Image (cartoon, rainbow, N blue to C red; front, side, top):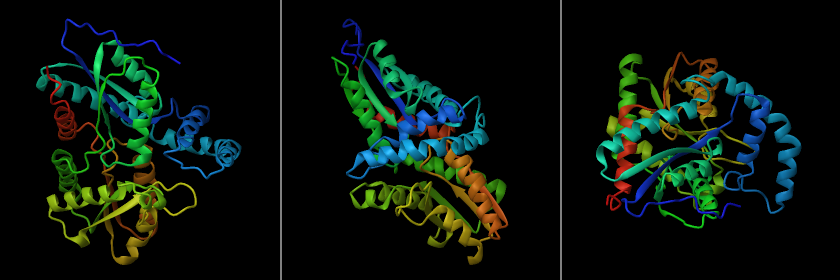
Length: 345
């Protein structure tokens, strides 16, 4: 345990603000050996998998079955997308691009001293290491922006857990601000609408636009998680901005895990059924993913494309995540600047 305070602030200077940008995370390499510790950290998070009362049973299943079978399969999938957006993991490569763009925007607009760092909830660079890097630069104020537009306990809530767990080891806890969601931020909605419009100028207007969000178990929603409602609010705002009728777009949920019921409708089942309903030209966007990753590149643009085309679909296209588009990084910068108000001096 690190009780020594890493902050060494110079009281003669204005307080230094640390901005921590976070995302889900990535293995260090697309190999079975790298996937095993990454998946173990991920699946042992009780925010992600809320285990039964007999937690030992879940650990037995995880260590005895899942971690002996899933890493190899996941490694093959990661190899399909590795280096797709630069060297290494797409999520990490795009994260660095986003960080640099945000950093430039904030430094041009904000009068105070601001330092930036990128941290991943699972894998490297870790949230705790990113926080320590900011502390070593003298940051006595910390603002955290998880790049999850819609709040879910399994993502944003888990990020808060990681931040608070790291701070439990610090003797001097910095002043803290934490962004829980930005699912209806005008700049974010506008960036989504712009990306769809630009895509359709090239590929034409589809029979149906599917907005696919990452799923969560239905019982999480029933337990009070606002994620389902925030996803629908985002979809409705995008549809309103684009002037879409109810029959021109559809919201679905992807990336199911386990055998229990998750939020519906499921993306894969929906895409398999659409051609029979007369949908031959389909476009899919994933508004909940701030950066392209395994779940968008491999799961949507490869696996679900195949489902749709095998069922009789004729034209499929995936609309990339917002990534480091200027309108997206401008929107994220606006979220940060808004939350920095009062910290200027």
